[in-house]
Length: 81
Image 1 (cartoon, rainbow, N blue to C red):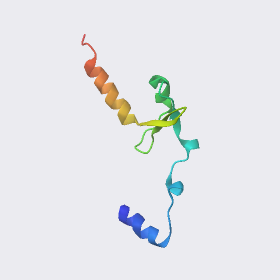
Image 2 (image 1 turned 135 degrees about the vertical axis):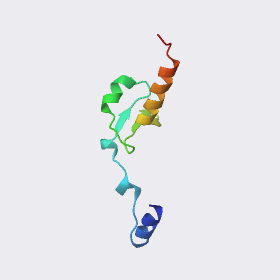
Image 3 (image 1 turned 120 degrees about the horizontal axis):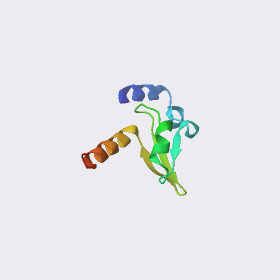
Image 4 (image 1 turned 90 degrees about the horizontal axis):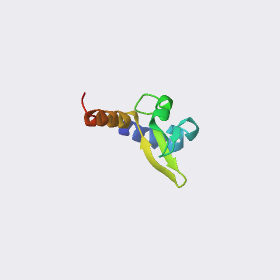
């Protein structure tokens, strides 16, 4: 993939702006937002991330694999009945 981009970029400059996902099409949440409320807005797929922002700007990025890891950890930490 990198060599393909390098070959292509020898004939034309490809900018980050041409390949990025615009902020208007990106899910944004705050660090104190409820995860339960955010989950229905998250889309599956490796390219879908949630930008976590506060008043100062970007503070993190959240993916479904981050959520899955946390749920697995919580299930392991929960007392067995």
